Amino acid sequence: MAVSLTSPVTGTAQTGLVTPTYTVLPDQMPDINAEQHYVSALGGTQTNVRIHAASDPFTTAFWRDKVIKTLGQLGLNGMYGNVPVNKYKVVTRKGVIVAAGQPPRVMLIRTEIECPAGAESYDFPNVAAGLSLHIGSLSQQSAGLGDTVKSGSL
Image (cartoon, rainbow, N blue to C red):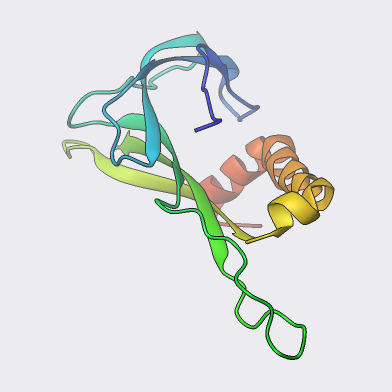
């Protein structure tokens, strides 16, 4: 995969975290088409944040389709019928405790990208712009999204 996560990962702004960084190490891949890392140490001020443990995970994985799809043949009318979609996703798992005396439960965070086959080569500037906006929006609104998850209010 072209993804090559380097350590440490600089976290984005979140209420209650001060300059968070995450030391990550390669983990067992969950599948042949994925790359996974686990958090082995924390940097900055992250009071009460826990690093990865088997029963309390803190991992991030990058996935792609096992087989990349391509455009098929043009139809008799000069149009493509069904255009296949290539899927990519990022999945982060973090153990969270729901109440005192309870074991950690796994929170899942997913971003999934569905790119129509052919667009990655014919119209890559627009594919890149869409990805840039998406990831930049997540980064820019990191603290706001965290506050929304906490309060339940958008």
